[in-house]
Length: 111
Image (tube, rainbow, N blue to C red; front, side):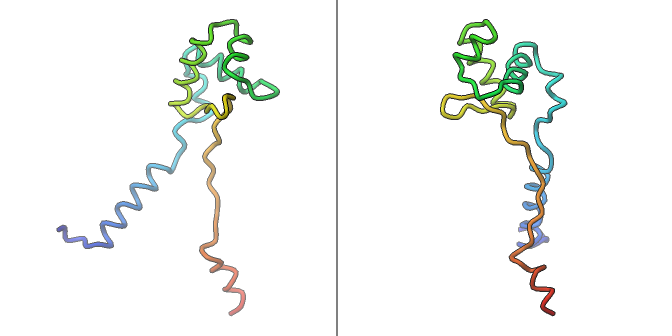
């Protein structure tokens, strides 16, 4: 056992978890660094008026479906897009929100 005790170890775990989720893994500016095939798919997803399937994406880009599947898989691993019900969509961005812990701050007004 270390000299920190249980609360020290818990504190370290919390800090490590916060550090891991502090910043999104992928930002919109990272699009510029993508390979050309991935950039084309990401651009098409961003500009499409509605969600596209793999086959409609392949037709729009004029490439084979296998190439789109491979590219979408690579983008999915980077956290750029996801395929839900057969449709390609952008992943939700990481947002920081403020939540009052258990209504504590609203109860302070009663003092």
